[in-house]
Structures are given as C-alpha cells and as structure tokens.
Length: 308
Image 1 (spheres, rainbow, N blue to C red):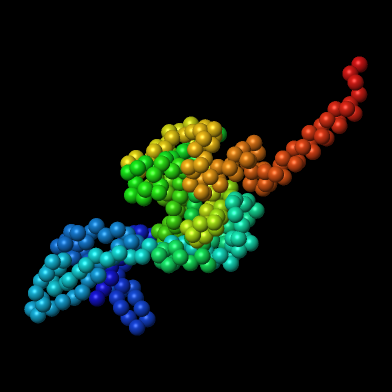
Image 2 (cartoon, rainbow, N blue to C red; image 1 turned 90 degrees about the horizontal axis):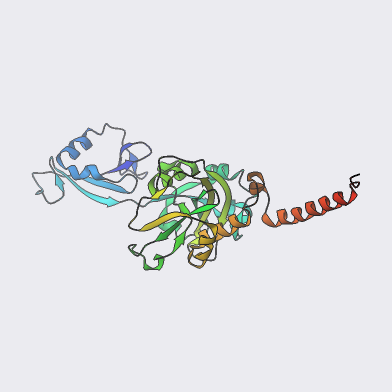
C-alpha cells in the first residue's frame, strides 16, 4: 500500500510506503501516479497537505474491480490528513505565557524563538493540549486611524458567531507557510481582495487563557496601513467588511471577538504614540512621562525672563 500526498511546499506529490521505521518516502519516479491520474481524473483534485490517496496494488485476476478502482489492478481511496499546525511549547514563551492581554517587550526575539522552538504537530491533538501554544499571525488592518471592521453574517455554519465583529485577520501556520511572514502573506491573499500587499509590522503578542480556545493559542499581532487603497472581503457570503472610525468600532465592542476586543483597546490606548514609542513603551508609562514633560515646560516658562 502506498500513500500519495500533495505537498504545497515542495509543489509536487510525495509518495510514502509502510516500513518498520514508519511511513517512508519513496525515492522512485512517480510515473505510476501520472498514469493513475490520467485514467482516474478525480485523483488530480487532491487538496495539498490535507488530503491523501491510499493506493493498494491488487491482482486483477483474483479480485474483481469495484467502485474507486483504477485500471491496472490498483485500488484507491481518498482519506483526510490531520492538519499540521505550528506550535511552541508554553514553557519556552515569555513568562511561560501566563499573562493576559498584549505585551511588547519580547518582540525582537519572537521570530527567532518560533524558528528555534516551533514544530508542526497534528491540530486535533494541539487543540486540547495547553502545554503547547498554536502561533497565530493576527493582522489588524488600518487606514490612518480607521480599522477594517468585519462582521460575520448569518450564512456561517456556527450560530454562535453570527453578527460577531472582528478587526483581525489570521489563521494557523501550516508547513507550506514556512514561517510567520509566509503565513501572514497567505492569510492576506486568501481573506482579503486588494491589488497591493502592505508592510506588516509586528507590534505585540496577545495571550488570553480565560477560554479553552485561548489557552492553546498565542497571537502575534501585526498592523498594516492601507494608505487609502481599496480593500474588500473575499468570502462575502460569510463576512462583511469595511473601514470604520474608532467610534464605530467602540459602538460594537460588546460584540467584538475576544482577541479583537483586546487588540482594539490596546491600539486605541496607544494611538497618540509614535511608531518607536508604540513598540517600546506601555501606555501608562507614556502618560506619566507626558505629565512630567508638561511640568518641566511650565517650570521653564516661569523661569524665562519677561520680554522687554
């Protein structure tokens, strides 16, 4: 029996056969695969990374042909492959990811940490294992002060998400993404319709262990600016989206998804800060510093000699 899997990163089909050491990749030419797809076109529709084709050689003289059989005595069936997602051990994260909200003090080393400690594991197992964190690039798209605000329509399958709002675009990282930047670019092209790709800037890490879902995920919050260029939703049946003023987002804050609410509150609290301040200093610290600067200016004004 041979398992054929479409591999998006390699841009080709890979074949594996059983061995005492587990599934082993075949190094033989895949001419037989080309022959099978020509006689059974359905095989050409295998989804990369998530579907596989199990092929069993059979003796056509001893076993009758049946549905799902290709010529030349090969019997096949489609089977799902567990999605592989990028995870990092919780113990490797800043302060063991026991904090809540957004933080900016660990950004410089985060990409290196993910590259060094990250691994791809089956998503079903990771969804129930809080000893790992699934890393999610989470993009907040701006247009100056405005946010790209999305609403989930009632066409979606999960009624709990109907009419919920979000300001973030993101998803799991899979082997074909290679790294955070690759996954972010894929999410941008899959979720949004735009004739440009903006500069993505990592501004914070987001953690929320107050829910079962949040306890197994960690957000890498990015910000990008559309700079007046048009952006639209691709899946218009399930989502609606448009740029909205901060006051409009605040008006639906009680219906924002949890990560979006945390990100919105943080970004609004830091809106008056410059890019350097934004990346390095917490809002409360800048508020305190501004008070001191105002006091210094007032004191200098009192010390200046009066104009003649």
